[in-house]
Length: 158
Image 1 (tube, rainbow, N blue to C red):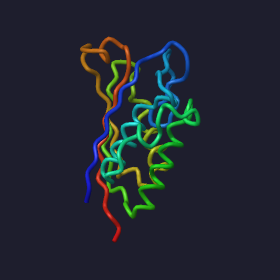
Image 2 (cartoon, one colour):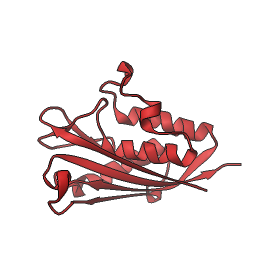
Image 3 (tube, rainbow, N blue to C red):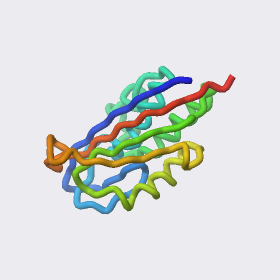
Image 4 (tube, helix red, strand yellow):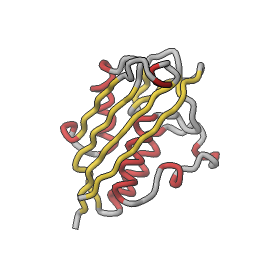
């Protein structure tokens, strides 16, 4: 069994859509990033790569590469899931948390869970999604951006 942890943050921008967990969220701001800046998927990718000992998202998908400009993070996750399977790992469970003062996440949790379960090729009960605010503290509390953390447990298929 191998554990991995991931963390990501992105600042808000005035234009562009907001994606969290592969789902478009109805909100007045988007997130700034080289890709679609989906912090939840980015933290999940880092957690999976970390559990396998395969580096991080920036090494695998550098922001200096034009081919990743504006790419949907769900496509990046597809690549990482293939790497996971090709290295004989299976995801046991994932625990994810979205840190956002705004927007409210509650109504998006189930669609995110459904989308990520499909992308990860797991049952929904292997995935837990939480959301919290920072009670008005820091850049998240000032509604300047969103953060996300992920913890995964992988099992090696022998």
